[in-house]
Image (tube, rainbow, N blue to C red; front, side):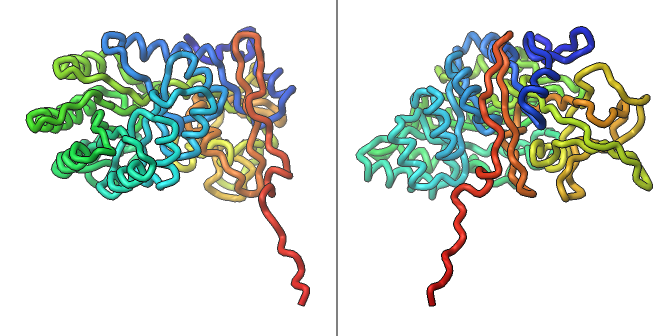
Length: 421
């Protein structure tokens, strides 16, 4: 299913023109298409249908309650990395038995909240964390399901060094050598239950091959534990399935499934997947309006009302997002420009050295593939108000997050009273 098609010269979300949404809700504006999310979820479920996996949506990709609720209704669980994401997931209707808790720095309060929610498992990333989970579960009279996140020392070919999480130099996971001891500790504890094993080797991976290498490494641990009498039930493959930002191939899900399912089936392991970007990236678009077109000494700048405070990926990761006019362009022929925002930072840009039709002042631009790591990484830097978010489902339009007000910017702040002395 095509995301945000152009009909009669105008980009649409569902049956709704994007320019009409910008006129109604203002800009910058995030727009999501529910039909695209359903379609991408269907692609994952069909590719891995034989395994009947738990699809634990990675909440960090986009945590809006409306999107979480939509995915929960489809049957998705949640991969969370904080107490706040736990709160979002449960409030959106994700049941505890479909939640896995990842992340290297879980606090005692977060662990307690997750135990209260009866989550499926904690993905454990250190011996200290295992001890903290055990102590918290003992204090609460609970049994915590655990899956050690193995670091298989596989360097994935991702577009940026920050998104490679399965090699030895990252903070994530437990080494292959250290992993068995954590399972022995868990097996011996009345307050821990080893339910599975976990790996996550990176983000925006477009080839099944790194997964195959990491899977083979991790299954050696599963087999060794089985020989010791520690039988696991689930294998969490993680997420990171790549999408096409710039014409590159997306992850071939069926090919990945053909590599993953047979060895897990042989061992009777239930499959857990943690896609985030794959489900929501294409389903989101950022609308921003041109404020100025200025020529500097060396290049031309298209200044828009949205920038790094709305979409950080270009500045932080060097991420590419296609940018086009919502309506047939009013501007001049194609030139090489920088599309920049209004933030007081040289690093504030949506695109650099991009060849595109030069838009006119007031023209509405669409920044594609903004559904993942878009709003969720937005900030109030420069005292900017975070934008509104809208969900389109066919002809139905729902404001799923109001634009922040100036009062929102200072909520919770207090000026000290004058000192009476």
